[in-house]
Image (cartoon, rainbow, N blue to C red; front, side):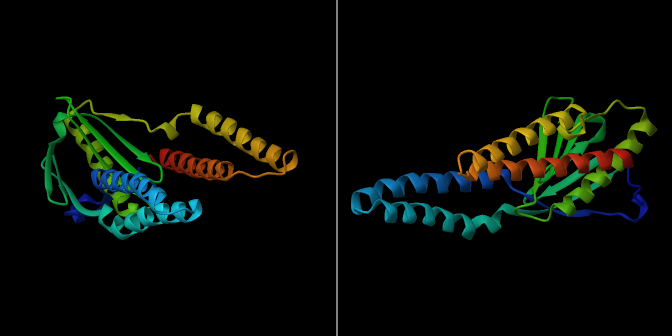
Amino acid sequence: MKVIDNKSITEQDFTYTSTKYTLGLLGICFGSLILLILVFTNLLDKTDITLVLSFSIPVIIFFIFKKNIKRFGKGLIKNGVLFLKLDTEMLTIDLNEIENYKIDHYNGVIFKVKLKSGKKHQITANDNFCDASSFEKFTDYFESNISNYKNENNLEIVRKKSMFEYKLMFYVLIIMTIAAVGALFYSLYFTNKTSGILFSSLGIILIMWAAYYKAQMRKKEK
């Protein structure tokens, strides 16, 4: 694990993404798509124009408002308490009350905390909408402090593994890669057709390989 000088640290500034806002925006865009298809189908005779207009408007709406997905936060651990300021919300979490936590590094960072009371907190920093590296620094800061606090107070706070830290994930990725490359080879040489879905699948698999490699490198640092 990276060594962090806690004496020189006050608050940790970071950016993250609002999950509620993202889901709401996607819901509005999808609802607009359905509504526009119904409206333009009745107003226009040409199907191609209907589809272009129906898809273009929701995409424009999304790109206009996606800047609001990015939010700013601060984090601080002091006297055994984690203070989190998320946009307009302030969270105070006693480290003694944490049952487990989990940090996933996939297309950004996902930080999950479960308390002994059963209450759960989750913060996501998606690379597509914010600079996730600042939130990654915060999670490094959190892990460093929680590890020291556990040792000093003899606490049982479980750090749950991310899916990319399990050995099984390597074999799953190998199988997925072989299947995707095989399907692409078959479509190119036997059907002379390519599919956007295949290329998208390969892109997702490459992202998963990058996440797996990063998880293994971080595991070695600890």
